[in-house]
Length: 335
Image (cartoon, rainbow, N blue to C red):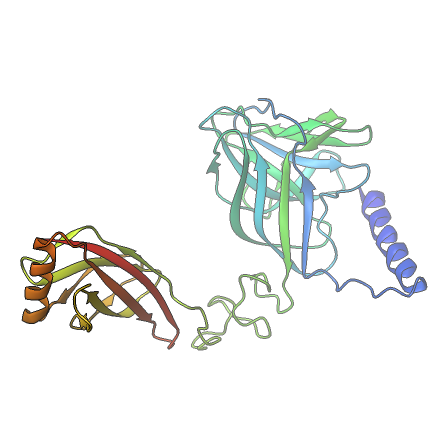
């Protein structure tokens, strides 16, 4: 195992030196990287329940070994077989001096897999150089943990109803030759060593902290994300003099709605009374725009003559950071 890891380091040095000799700019070290490999074929059903797995040896790329530098697993993926209800979790192991003995570094919860495709799960698992990617199978078993690969690759596994605590050593003594684990992981650098991936998880990548990567009490970076809003409406009667619509914003916002009705026989546009409301994130809120009496009378006459009328809306949303979004729509009117 040690010789294999040293060989990988040497190969990385040779590649970097070769790039410099060719006059190419070396790649920035380890901001985002991927380890592991998904089953390139149709996954089968081959893992016993309550088993733990690790890629114990590998021959060629892609590697299952965490590269040099501090990093964090931010997502991991698995190509599931066609059977529903299988449970799987990612694990990180570190080889010991004893063959078949590994220290369980960290892991995530067991996830129920969606059958017949690639499943991807978010995690936040700090890892270190030389750590090995692995898997944990739920009680039902049957997940597609590994697949056939070239000679020189092998996986080790062990069955235990209770996993060892993180930081302790377990035995994965059973070995399958010419196999690779059906798992990949996306790693992000962790320059400030706070356990948050610098690219997508750390709001303050320059300073360590436990609050989204920021020190306690730090306001973090300003909110620059524009809110979005979905509109829903249906054909509405003018009988009550109000025209309704429903708005669903992507975050907590102040909503302002404006509307107008164009009557073909009139030269002027009839405007509806502007309305507004505070709306929570991802909750549908109803707004009602009132028609002036003369607008209602004109619309009633037009509809009785068989004309088609529509009320057109313009909705604006503004979040606490001052970011705005908008949407437009139209609803058909009836008597």
